[in-house]
Length: 244
View 1 (cartoon, rainbow, N blue to C red):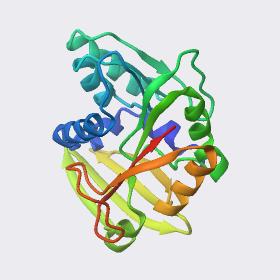
View 2: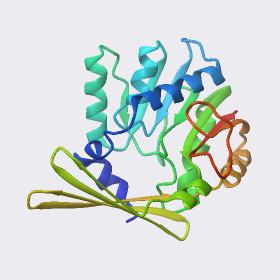
View 3: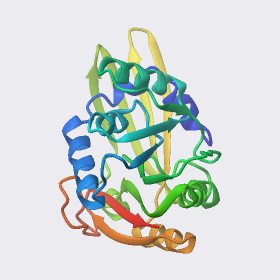
């Protein structure tokens, strides 16, 4: 269970299950980030847990200097291929959030689509935030796009089923103590595969307290990719902007 992300994100099935993710949502979020941070094209960006590179590639296409890193070599190969198809520079690195180092500094670090809370304890989950603080230039921004704990607890769907590419995908969700657990069952013909997702549930206050302890200042909070104000009960997302 502890290293669920290594198995799941290295699986060829991961991108199949999440192919429904909307590029429009990604674009909205990135445009919101660019409006709020007012970056110029000479600025540098680090995409933490970049996955298949959707955000990195969009930002690179806008002229920014972007480095993306992820633990999954499978997803990084996809990211490299996607960048090549768009004739963009390939700046993807294989690394763990808990053990990452760069010589250079950045003007913006992004951690998007709930790529946070994967690890077993608070120390591991917030370790990269400490690292990020040292990697940012003065007045640099850190943007965290995370789930809204209260909204999830009130609206969690216990089980769902879908068919993609002749595969039956059953997802079962539950909250166990301070984590939301998703069991993913993928069936095709006589073959069946099982995967787990396990994300620590943090409240807005818990996150802000830890960022403040590290030295960050929270400058804004949004509840959706369209830039709507954050509402503790009704917002589907928790999008936090911090400044060094």
